[in-house]
Image (cartoon, rainbow, N blue to C red; front, side, top):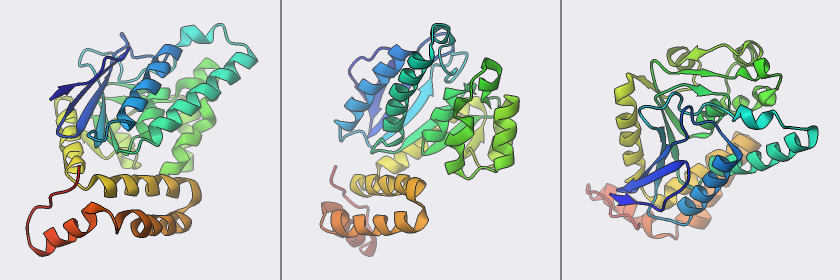
Length: 263
């Protein structure tokens, strides 16, 4: 296990290719401007560290929320212009998180509110506690919260999205599992171990293949399955076939042995 550089509001620990990124801004892990700035630096570090092959996003056990949404204390001083400026800055960082080259797994053990739910949606896999709730309460703060736009790429029912953003109600994990937002719903104590298990499975794969698959999957979000699929096949031809893991992966399968991938 390796202790990574210190980052304000975050703890990063890596073992066997899996980085556990723990958000730590008590009491509710509200998303302040300073936290986003720190996250930007965390992303820089992850992208510059090839040994990190999967990331688990977690909170501390005593946190009152996994991510409690935007820091409302900052909102009181907004003007139209500062609101636009903040949104543009935050969108740039959240887009970087979404486009991280290695897969991300959300280990949601506490409530995910507003921006917290959005961050969960930007992870590749979401594991949640059966006691955790999710909500988009921007309607109660006289904001739009993007009007649910972030969730359309997940193919959630439009009627469900509209109910969620117009009522701002709490939606507990079992209900969200039914509409396909979550991969696994477990007792709280089992959430992080399950996320680590999944991350370990991914980290053991060919890093080149995993990164190419994630890049392609993100492209499908943007351009649709046909163009995205064509681009994915092109990545296989242009990036993977001549890479060190391609023949090793196929040879290992044919020879019934564990592959030794290039790290």
